[in-house]
Length: 243
Image 1 (tube, rainbow, N blue to C red):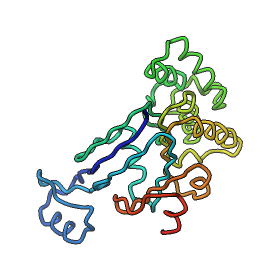
Image 2 (cartoon, rainbow, N blue to C red):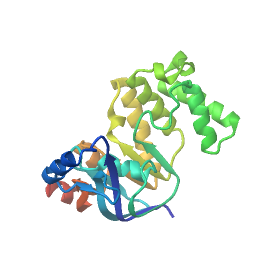
Image 3 (cartoon, rainbow, N blue to C red):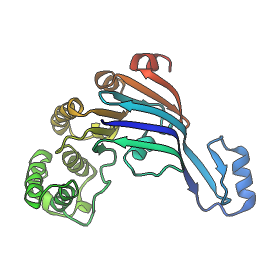
Image 4 (cartoon, rainbow, N blue to C red):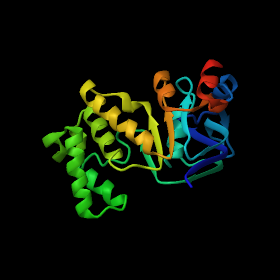
């Protein structure tokens, strides 16, 4: 059964170009507790610290908090982009992610080639992947740009391609960051309609956003992050009112 289980989950990133010992000492002395020196004598930032939670089938969870609180880092960890340095993460269910428009794309390949490769990776046949490319092309409205390298796309075009690719197949576990709200008004009207269907169809939703109207519309539970830690976890209104 689809679920997400995190136990004492910790994510750290090393800070480079800090070789001078005196500089390290000054920074560590003045830094918040998110900076520390590891066993290899590197200065690291603790992006997420000792997170423990469980999300079960049927739950719609919002990740809330200020910029830099750790919302997107947690989403990327759930998507498999980052590997925990400590703790345990267990995810059951097929994952679909709307996190980074360019994630998983070959910028030198065309939009169509990226779509076909994504379909093959998800277990579709070549014919099914080609058919999916046609559908993505229609939905995204990219037209002839579908057959030119993605590196030539504007940021908005990348968002449209990435969104259309990610939403062609309904996942069991849906991970979304707030970039999906970007784009021109006409496309977003169509995109939100499809998003609503995905949210309804997914067994689990995990959404990171600053838009409290979206949180209230789509989510039943909220996890508030501050400085990489969970400071509140419960019903949406209860967590939002406690902020």
